[in-house]
Amino acid sequence: MMIIVKPGADKKSVEELRHYLGGLGVEIQDIQGKDTTIMGLAGDTTGIDRGNIEAYECVERIVPIQEPFKKANRKFHPENSVFEISGRKIGGEKLAIIAGPCSVESEEQILSVAVDVKNYGASFLRGGAFKPRSSPYSFQGLGEKGIELLKMAKEKTGLPIVTEIMSLDKLELFLQDVDIIQVGARNMQNFDMLKELGKIKKPILLKRGASSTIEEFLMAAEYIMAGGNERVILCERGIRTFETYARNTLDLSIIPIIKRLSHLPIIIDPSHATGQWWMVESMCKAAVAAGADGLIIEVHNDPPKALCDGQQSVTPEQFRSIMDKLSIIAGVEGRTI
Ligand code: PEP
Ligand code: MN
Image 1 (cartoon, rainbow, N blue to C red):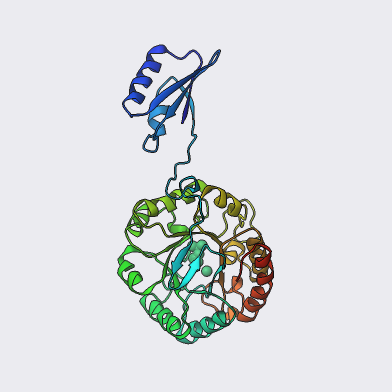
Image 2 (cartoon, helix red, strand yellow):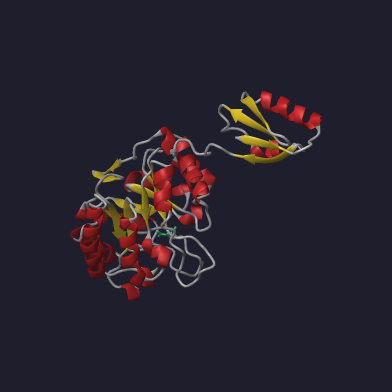
């Protein structure tokens, strides 16, 4: 961290700041320019509150040098993280393809979609049981019954289950029955939830908040990892911008950025990012070409009758065709599908 001191700052305020910094156990190295003094802080600055330093009158501004995330940081973990989850891997050579309906609706629906996506090459089954809907009048999910149905689909197909947790009251149920616990975009900064999920051993699929910066996203992962649960899979699902044509704006540049900053796997959700089924294929192809570690795709057996997100769900046949094309693109990136 570098502290730029205001030109002509009051000497007393500078001395007070030095005294305060001395108490924080960091070393201060001065760079003396013609008009400006820069104080370089050496040592562990993680616990330092910038706001306290900026409160000194003599401080012009602060330039952070280190990223605030440690456990998620590639600097301290140069190799890619690869997680083994219920016999499948995420982050390795094989892409993780998570597919299934937005919401579990009935036994018939989830079993039919699960069998199809399994046959066409998915390695995990998604399906919401507890749904974060914008309107209280929309279908809210089948709740515990939905988890039961996902378990049936897992028994039938062998596909591990990915589903979203909405409340920590249900954590026991998720610990028993779910293979990857999804934290939705709306809960990305539910810090109490993140802390609790840090204490468990299940892998977490953490979705990026619609208005979150990449640093905020990595800090949310850091919350989980700081508690001891280092199996966090990042998921970009589009962010909110001035553009309204698509449901969200898919920020594909996050892939090379995460690959540079972090060792954690990053997957892409083209369904919530675009909000339209006809854009899903092109965004899947782009994501794989850009180096994503996997995809989470909404697939429904009868999209016009879906209880949630039918407009962005591809049919099993469309999913099959996407998978065929992805296998060629994956090869270019040295990956398999
Ligand atoms: C979902 O995956 O079902 C979902 C609600 O996604 P998001 O949290 O990204 O909106
Ligand atoms: Mn959905």
